[in-house]
Length: 371
Ligand SMILES: [Mg+2]
Image (cartoon, rainbow, N blue to C red; front, side, top):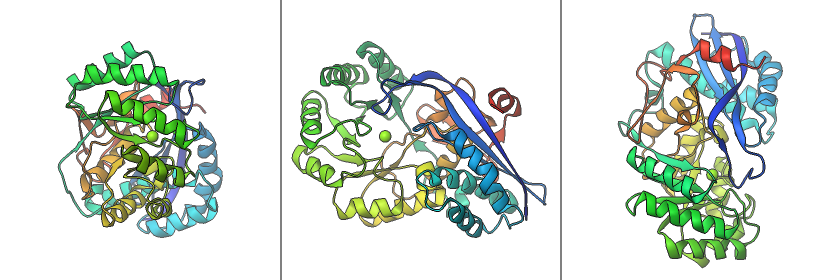
């Protein structure tokens, strides 16, 4: 099965609600600038991938790189030799920081093709199922305490298994939000806080975390400090006693190694897009399992294609003790697939069928494409 043609479609997908977090407080994101990868083979099969990156907003630049640099490098190669195709992609991208997002999009398209070729779902390519479905958390953006409380109450009513709150504003704003959400969500829905590296020092982060811990039970605090500050994370972890999660600090197996060597965090937030694909993410899960570090799967607000890839990973990895955050399709006014992973009552389930199991909604894609 030879790769004959690569189509790259940059899209602009309107969101139901603008994203506000510690990363972009002054610049809300009202639409995702993502990309769709379609790999066509000489056997008539089509593999689908998705470039999903919310921060920074470089999705369309990545689409340009996919078209001009990656497509010519992989056309003519065997679609069933993914390691070779991915090695070529790695060579062309040369370790550029955004390379994993592109690599991931192509890897999921190759997995989709392999699954369709062998007539098995992608989770079987990962070794088979560990669970039937994965529990989901819901994420709440920064806004007024009343609005955040209303979101929390709705998430609880809809069956989500945990709530994630974006913090990192003025401490009094964060405190008001934490109190309001805790009250609305109830004590049985675990609350996780994500600072997106907003605090500049251990002292500043510790002050905030200790204040939150006094008013609510906090499951963990995600990325309190900038990504390279592993020593700061370690100090914070020992000083506050609240579990610390790595997100921005964790983009690769090597990062996982550095984090564990520094004893910097208690939990890993593993992303398919940031790791460079489903298998690379599974490798981080395996490494973490060996160290007894629990992991979840994080979200770039992926749409239907990449969310399906995350769902296949989620049902296959052995060590997934907490709710995951791949609720991306719920963020959009319209999805790019007409068949995909299902999200029901706080559970994510893989689609039926071979490969990723998704079907592109060509009308929706036509509506969202920007070239
Ligand atoms: Mg995060």
